[in-house]
Length: 467
Image 1: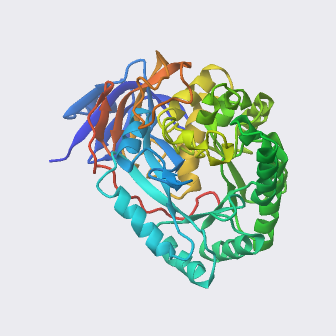
Image 2 (image 1 turned 135 degrees about the vertical axis):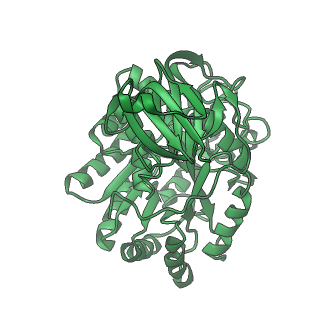
Image 3 (image 1 turned 90 degrees about the vertical axis):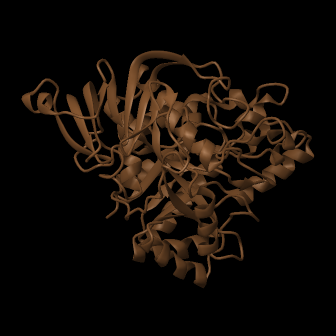
């Protein structure tokens, strides 16, 4: 006996089209779509029927940048794979791509195995991994080929955080050259960490210790400089490049210039850069520590360039860089020294709603919402067709979304394992109502029905943007 679900009467919104259609799900996959009220649709029967009248039927979100249980600054991000994926589901995200970490002096394999052990049997939704390469040498370069064969097809390096994750230009170039041969995608955190460290020490010596100085020392020009530099290294290596968490107008300009040359260069931004600013970092009584992340929040005038980049496709993806640290006991590690505040914000539960609010506000279209939150990240990281769309053969990762509902974002009602919300009190229009992951209800009419262990590891193919 097959397990069938029928979603009736909704507006199906994908990156490609919007159509009033019924969706038939069978054995965890999309079996067929047919125009609502058509003879084909009326003939369908199913054990479970979902009425989506006056609702959107959209693909489950793909958040391609999360950090669950991530070690940083002597502590670790407060969401586990269990709590973080549950919160993601509440927010309409059905797949995350998290970062496994290679420690300096250890193998990629050891780092990846450790993250498989953290996630296995814990996740409420499907998950995949990128690999952070902290130690580029002959051994790790060789390992990259094997990981690509296992479906870990993207590797992240840093021009930031000297002494922790930092790689110099030679190491970055070698990793890019390897990616050019095995088809992997190199992801770069682009900030000039060497110069930033000088500015940090100068600020602290002056007594500038408050959270707002975190943003001031991590200059927009140093993000732009590093973005320019890694683009040129990728050109030398003849490799594609994906720049994570782009926050500055000057960095967007570097990506746009490269793309105007036809180069395979791609960019991601995050909701915090679209909706928050240095005004938040400057909040009194150390409240600004809640908003410390890297790249940092920028002055509000940078937001227009980010929205424009999303409309012109100079930025292709909105991910969260979800890396939550509790204010009490974790962010407070940096009282008296902003450089000791753990870098990261919570957001995996808020992304789909915030981007729908951007539709309401006229920044992007409905289809662009689905493109940047679902389809583009799935294509970028090699599993589009399985994830990121509603089409026959795709996994039945489907969200029933009420565009008319209104909600207020708050730590009092969110499901992330963190004691504050970066968007506390923000009113948004639109709310997730029901979430299916591979056809199974995870959230049903705003009630959690999921379970730890439903989520499976998803091996990925090569990036479908750069084949």
